Length: 444
Image (tube, rainbow, N blue to C red; front, side, top):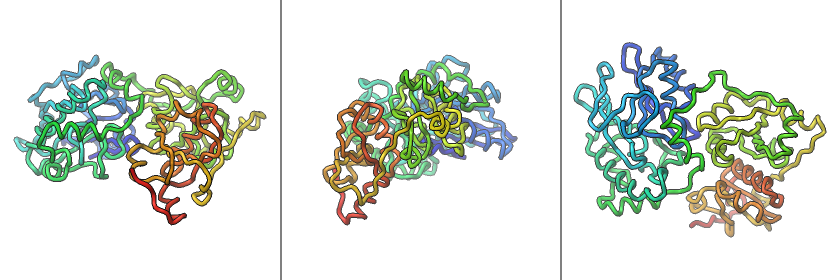
């Protein structure tokens, strides 16, 4: 059964092996969903397999080994520093009826493997990790910029190898829609070899150089925290306290930390942030994509202070951070109300509707492909992840926009943090503007 992390755009898998035993594939450090599924189906996780050294999340395999006694299955080429069953091309693991056959499939990473699930001699499905994914293949530029092309050539060979499996074999990738490790166009998260052979654009390129050009040409930006997690996953992530949460920090202590430059992350809905927030705090609304933008906007290794609403779950906030290797110093005790009650100042951010956009400079902070697909005429484009380097140059009478408003508010907070001019934030996106004004969007 797939367990989807909509925020990171990834899937982990829990396979019922019979007799109450299970295999976990590419489990996240945030094991809450996997453990809940295992309890629901009365399964004990006895194997934990990782297809590669993940860049976008920390593995939960080591956690399962310690807490459940699970046997870790991983590539011998990964050089992991913790106990695991090191697998090479062609190695098989007896799962107790079913078997797991190892295929080396480098490309996304050097040590990448795929796992073919066999019932007798018949392949049932293949866990492809970041190799063959639905409608695409995962990016090849995460190991090192100077390895991008070489790994793209390796990815070509790996996809061709996987495509030789029978048509009916199910394809179970880890990366999918919403993942910055990949760029699939659709929303399906699983497929079959036959379907991918016919519909995957990258499998239509019979020429290797054309494949490499298409794959590299599709690569967009990715969060800077990706540069750290592969090595942490090789060494083995630290075990997580199961009572993970947010420690309260008194208002005067937070004020002192604020004065000396501590990062404050406000996770409240953007409407609440707009009404009043601590000056220079970063707005990253708690939602599916929270972890990605935390890892994009807060330097890795920094432990921010959280400001939240009372109805937002502190455990959820802490786990969203933990799965990508972040921790928090704690949270403002009593929330923004305690800050105001202490007589400490707040600032507001202006919200505008699509009808209010005229005579304003527009700054669009969506990703490159989103902007190219349709944007307001004359809009300036800077991706949110690149904005910090350009934020102080933003002039007054600027309206920041994204697809809905959350990233735009994050951008407004980045500009404020950098000392830029006050900006307004659009509630809505380009489609709302086009519908309101009856005007077409520009493309390209």
